[in-house]
Image (tube, rainbow, N blue to C red; front, side, top):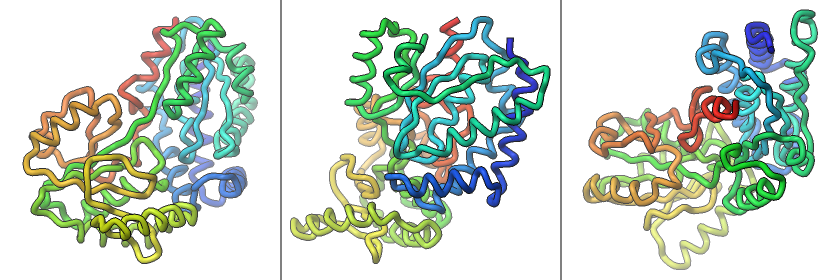
Length: 359
C-alpha cells in the first residue's frame, strides 16, 4: 500500500517549486504550452499554474483524500486541453487514493501535466521507503481503454458519446465511468454591484478566453441596469490579461454580423471582448450574453430548466438566498469562478467518492 504521507510531502515540495515563476521545469512547460494550438496566453497560464499550486497544501490534500484504497485499480483519464492544467485535479485524486494513473495528453495542452508528473516522480525517487509501484503514464486513448478498470473523461457531448460507446465495447461498466459533458456558468446581478465586484465578474467571464466550464457565459441583470460599468470592468481586466489573437479575430466576425442585424452590443477597442443583449443563449467563447430580468423568479425558472447544463452560478450571497439555490447547482461569489478549490466537484460529482465506489 502506498505511503500517503510521503506522497503528500513530495506533492507539496513539487508545488512549492512550481510556485516560482523562474523554476526552469515550469518555464519550459509554459513555453511549450504557448507554442501549441490553443488559446492560452502567458498571463492566463501563469494565473492557472499559481492558482493550482496554491491548493496543494499538506492539510488540504489529507483532508480531501484521507485514506488509500485497499485495492489499487488502473484509472484511465481522458484529459481535455481547453484551459491550462485542467487535468491536475483528476491526477492527484487518482494517485493520492493509491490507484494507478493512465492518462491521455491533449494536443492543445501537451506539456504542463506531463512535466509536473515527471517532476513529482523524480522527487519521490529520493525516498527509498516509498513504494516502487508509482508509475503514472500517458498513453493513447486506444491503449487506455485496454488497460483501464475505470474511466474519467471530460469533453464535448460528441466526445463523451464516443467515450461511452468505446467503454461499452471494452467492457467498462457504467458505474466505472465518470463522464463530464458540456457545461457553462452564469452570473446573476442585483444591479448594485461595486466596481470591484464587476471587475471580479469580468475575470469570471473572460479569463481563459471563456473556454472553461466555470466561465460565465450569461449574465442576468435587472432590466433597469445597464452594462456600461461591466464593459468598463472588462476593459480594465483586458489591460492586465490581454486577449488571445484568435479570440479577437473570431469576435470581429460576430460583431460585424451583429452590427448588420442591428443587435445591441458592446465591445472592447480591439475586440478584446463582446457583450450582447438578447435571449439567454450560449455564444462563442469571449462573447457574453447580457440578459434582462424583471424578477428573480424568472431567473430561477430558467435555472431549473437548464440545471443539467449549469456548472456554477456566480452571485452575491443575498441573491443566492433569494434564488433559493439548492445543492444541484454550485454557487460562488464574484471572483471565485476561476479559483476552484482542490476539492470542488465538477458536475456536482465528487471524484474521491467515485473512486471509493470502485473498491
